[in-house]
Amino acid sequence: MVKINVCAQVEEFLKTQQYKLTTPRREIIRVLNDAPKPLSIQEIYQQLNERPADLASVYRTVNLLCELGVLLKLEFHEKRYRYELSEAFSPHHHHAICRKCGAIENIFDECILQTVEERIKRQAGFHVESHILEFYGVCEECASHSAAQ
Amino acid sequence: MVKINVCAQVEEFLKTQQYKLTTPRREIIRVLNDAPKPLSIQEIYQQLNERPADLASVYRTVNLLCELGVLLKLEFHEKRYRYELSEAFSPHHHHAICRKCGAIENIFDECILQTVEERIKRQAGFHVESHILEFYGVCEECASHSAAQ
DNA sequence: CTTCATGCAAACCGTTTGCAAAGGC
DNA sequence: GCCTTTGCAAACGGTTTGCATGAAG
Image 1 (cartoon, rainbow over the protein chains, first blue to last red):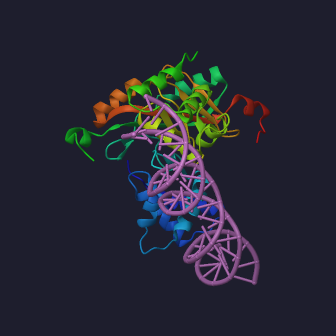
Image 2 (image 1 turned 135 degrees about the horizontal axis):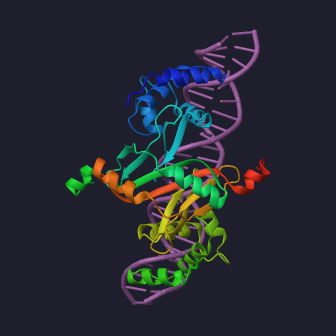
Image 3 (image 1 turned 90 degrees about the horizontal axis):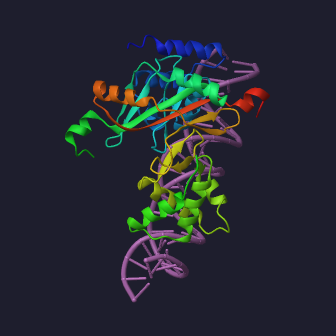
């Protein structure tokens, strides 16, 4: 699953939307693109090289990217949000969250929810546009140690 | 889908766990049982008759009930949590959240995720214990008005 | 040169906590 | 009467915001 040039894609998209391409924005996009799993604001902030952005700017940029549909805002019951590239820039997937160590794994599974979404539309009149599906449990490692944190 | 005596069930359960049955706890359980959809802490607090509980007590009671597995803690991207009776006291279901009016509908659908959970275990070694599945879109009413808030 | 984005600090708001008083059992 | 739970108020932590400065186009 190679990510080709996603930074450039996002930057191009920002330009077409009349947003300025600043160093903080570039860096934040880079960090998000490099991440193997959803990041919190704090984590994004910490992974910025040479502090090119204030914490408040990270918040502002991330919120902007969410509104533009570049990022997805996720929640794993940690009292802070996590963010990852949306399906526009990254393949659709779900998450498996370990209740022992908190690890988040990406689950790429042929998504079987299409038929469910159609049934919901027929039965409840609700037009599904997107869904969030997360699995909670115990990861392989914690299961083997059986006494992780 | 009739809820028979769920309050009494929960109260009985608390007793077996050595927790005291106080007026605040009884009232909070009643409010949660009466609710047709997940409630926020503020909503629970407001629906208490004659203020038998402080806000802090609502937080404490709700957190306790979550830890005991009586309640599920849910998140709908509103920056506050919502709570509902867990599957131990209420049938398993999913939610459909309208992005226009914020309405939350319960979706009772034969859950097709069992097979997915088994596949995840085989392929990723992750032992799924529970899942959260939420659908985002536009509800029937907002779709017909087509210009809701 | 104009406009938008940033940095800094203060404000915000949902949630948690310490402690003395009250209420179950 | 003992011990848990409550109410109150203060603290906490993630997030947002106002405003003057600075950088992009």
